[in-house]
Length: 229
Image 1 (cartoon, rainbow, N blue to C red):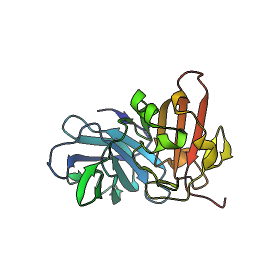
Image 2 (image 1 turned 60 degrees about the vertical axis):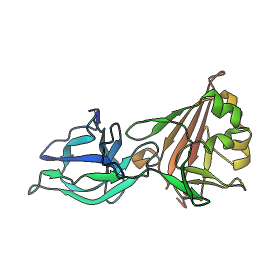
Image 3 (image 1 turned 90 degrees about the horizontal axis):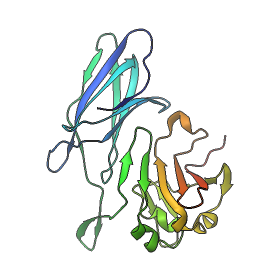
Image 4 (image 1 turned 180 degrees about the vertical axis):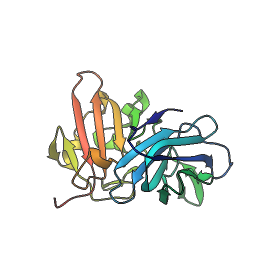
């Protein structure tokens, strides 16, 4: 099991659990399990589930938390109001079920064909293939292949249902039209962060980063909720 996070001084606790498929009840391996503070959603630590869907997060300071579980092709699930305390240093959670992310069209249920990504603690990394590049006419069209990102027929973009989207390119605020002009043939990888925690301030909901395949240029697009700060 691959774990992240740093040890803190003083007394700490542990959270354990198992992630299973809601339909088959089979364990889900390599799912991302992230522990965040209950109040500010800052990332505290996280792990990747093992072959049996099991996880263990150690060295957790006493406090109240919530847990985010995500995996490619599945809906993101949350477990709220988890408390690690002197009275309960080890919190053993019940099996957590996650469901496939499906859409209903003409009374037929289909699983959307999306890019396969590599789950990390605070992000998912997607590597574009030739089929995606050929089928995408722009950088905006590439987004249609990214899980959790939706682009409708009017080219309105939403991330996990959040439609108030901002794009930043190299730290500069850009509009949707600028993203639409990016050449998908130059894009090698896409990184998507849906829970940035302390990494991104000012109310941003996520971070979308494209890396160039040929010229090694980098376009960084922060996608998120607008903020007044």
